Length: 426
Image (cartoon, rainbow, N blue to C red; front, side, top):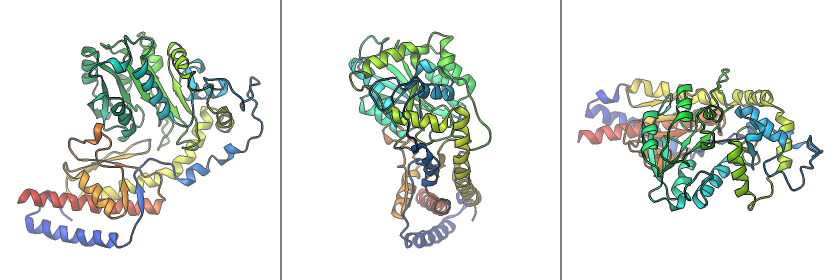
């Protein structure tokens, strides 16, 4: 292999023919590989099966977890999440298995009613907008698109989103109602917001009195190294500036125990929590307290959560390393055709290919039996302006499957790049 950008037409045509032979050989295998969603693998979920072996459902205060009541969640479950998230139990609401559902419900509250600091419901705000750091989490963007928000792309860096842009836009436009953030091991780049970025979020001035920060701590304990990264707690930092009602922090055990049967949590000011509960109470009497109690007794405390996540790490690190090693070996000699992130935690690797090639790569992979998250999915409306980003999820397949999928992916990237370079030479 040699630098593709330095090849003449005949060299590129020869390389294309060789890649097409390799691609055809893979296609003949009839593969069914999937690196599309960040799902825990079966061996990770097996780690939590002891959670189900519980018979006594009486909480510490005598509450029978099998019955109605406790809309905010069992106190011991609120205390567990408070320790993990760095807040107080009184600032925690414990929900069902999906933090995304909590996010949607809060967005719906804003849409239908507004919040306690809203001049009017968001549905009555013409040209309402939401800030979206990109690349980001596609399901966040689907919520704001569903509710008719114009989504504004904000570039990401290794220290977090462009705060100069965020501060300027939020301060001058009262139709901007909030921002999506994944501050630790961001989805999909795996970046960690810097202390300065978090403190700027806490202190920022906004034209909208009801501007909300949807702060998704999905990966707060999902470390891929022995370094336990801790960052300032946005809710606590915001109190110094009187902005605590602006903050909604979320997390869940979806990738700790069971994605379909975990528990989720919202952390916010006591004032916001009182308002949220007043809006939730017509909808639900309580979430699954039996499951809350099972999780508390299994995980026990933050130290127990971290011990459990260390078991996950031993399963995941070889899969992440396999992807990065394959990329380095296969892309390195080809010149500047791709680069990728090296996350210290989370569930994804971002692969950036030559602009104009991502959709073609995804198509080639799909036709060869490898499913990826759709090219452009990490951007609002599914539109990547550069057509260069692909989100790689190495967690669900087995290690041999990850190795095979990674190599096939490199063939598809190289083939798409060669096709593009040849087209440019015409």
